[in-house]
Image (cartoon, each protein chain N blue to C red):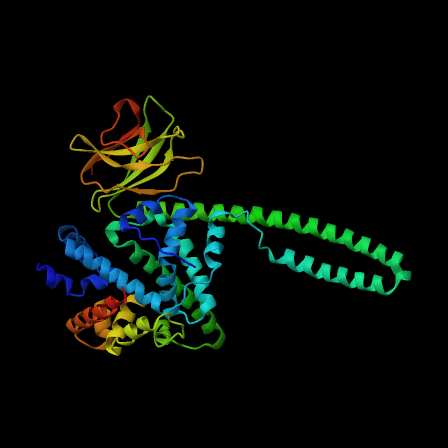
Length: 273
Length: 180
């Protein structure tokens, strides 16, 4: 296809707007790889549309970024707790009122002092109750956040598994770690490779696990992945055509072009049919 | 104040796999305003739009490992999430309204399409460029980009030939290109 004709066909606008069909997407990506001017055009159309959307609004309010980040990263942060501020605020108003009265009438000093004590005492109690409630709240919110995360991960796994043509490939632990295991969901039609349910020892610093696909008897790099104590969420690896088997080795962080055979942890074959 | 640092698509996608605050920060700085712009075209209320933006970002973050470059650009993926989150919000609001007043309004998009949101556009130049879009071009870009209609759907909806949709879309983009 003529490049200029392609560029002016309106297909790139659909591609960026997310309204292109699967065939159109594939076509745009093929053209992008083949022609630098198509790649440049895609970037220009995207930048234009971003600028257009931005032109209609002011930037989001200043606190929003922090609010979202807190929501996702520090569930423990309760510095913005509303109820705490309201309670303490109303109590300190009554304290002020008390002070005013003390100044006006020295005779009432002792009686008022007693009230102040009792208020302080109440304040301390309220504070401690509040802290306890907040604590419980935090624990619940934490728990909920964790459950939500797990649910999302499970849902994602399920979506990948349910896709027609998807096959489960169980990777079994080899001599280095017989207890280890993992699952690859391989779809030879869409060529997608997902890694899930990884049970592997946490690697030493500076090392990373690397997934390999065996294609025509040769290992092909399918990407590195991290294992930590946070649990493993399903992860998309490099697309593979005609993989017969998958294996995992432990390599220098960032991976290597060839697998270290002596550091092979897992292996499993794609069942035919 | 948000400062945008330029990253290549590949760098951003790579960063997205990192689960740290820095990656989120870069993503937010680069796309939050544009995504808010998209959401505001569907939802007129500023405060609700920011809530929807927050929901959209949380979805983006939770699903970041599912992003598949072979299905489209990173921005397009996020744009889809922002649009869908807006539509979900409108549907749930619509449902509540239906319960209340038994009204049978069959198209949420329709009722919001002509919603011209009043905003402060910084820069007279930008205003002039966007203003120089012809109405017939603007409606096409807005339907495709903000509402997610395919070119076929737009042709049917506006009752114009598909070829005309394509040429007008292209003409609109040529105008908007002056924005960059």
